[in-house]
Amino acid sequence: MKTGFTRHLGSITLAALIGLSFVASNAASADDTPAKQIFGKVQLPSNSAPSPIGFYAKGCMAGAVAIPTDGPTWQAMRLSRNRRWGNPAMIAFLEKFSQDAAQLGWGSGILIGDISQPRGGPMITGHASHQIGLDADIWFTPKPAQPLSAQAREDLPFTSMLDKSKFLTVNSTRWTPTHAKLVMQAASYPQVERVFVNPAIKKKLCETWTGDRDLLGKVRPVYGHDEHFHIRMFCPPGTPSCKAQAPVASGDGCDKSLAWWFTKEPWAKPKPDAKPVKPRFITLADLPKACAAVLAAPAASEQSATFGTAYVAPQPQSGDAAIQQAITAGSTDLPDNAIPIPRSRPVLQ
Ligand SMILES: [Zn+2]
Image (tube, helix red, strand yellow):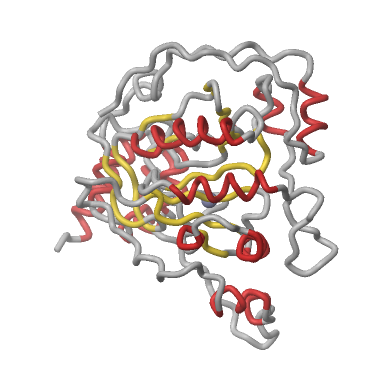
């Protein structure tokens, strides 16, 4: 067991290595620093072999790669968040999925929301999971043919698939069969473990999906997820440090577990006399031990860690406003400009 002294020293070393002056200047309480603050400040991935470490909601990631901000069939959104990092298996998967989405008629591909931070770990805002580079959010808004400017990627509002005037109901003017096909396409890959959607969306799929009903079991109802859906991959082969999730039950999941979401229980407010729960943030000590080493490891450069850099996106044109209007209105019928042809892409092992 470590003594307080060595732990203290370790914190200082770590702080020095990753340049976190606030930890060093306050070393006495460094062990209490929420891990999300430490991981949230790291700008680049570790220059090491790719490895998901721990569980989706309690872990970190070594050797991440970034998906390029632009590809022929995808765009990464909210670039300022610096969360387009993932396990190479996830990034390669997103490329493939984006091509399949475009083939389905989902605009010219997908808009990609958060994947993970450069070294994974807990985040300051949003998400309990997304910590090991195997979770990704995909917008329920197709990629327009013309690239969005960096600013538009920050500002473009999310479009909910729900009719907010009703209780847990899909907005039937926004939700289309292509939306359903897109979610079920995501669930169809063997490397995808679960797909999270709002309970109203799951119900809609239960009522309308005529394809493989067993695949529907992978699509799990959860709070939120009405303006994006969330793809979770299995631990890739040969990653013993990755902790698998219990498998989903067999069947389509259109059962009592779904019906529960339509009762009052999941939406009940805490009783006024209930004792307030004091939040306790996850610290580095709560995460797998290897996560300290991940933080301390030397960084890879952004360019070397970006999954293929050969593709050069066409420059945004003056159509941003019109495109924004079209996609805010939920239309999948976007200008059908020629999809640029990618140059050859490097193969990641
Ligand atoms: Zn998510």
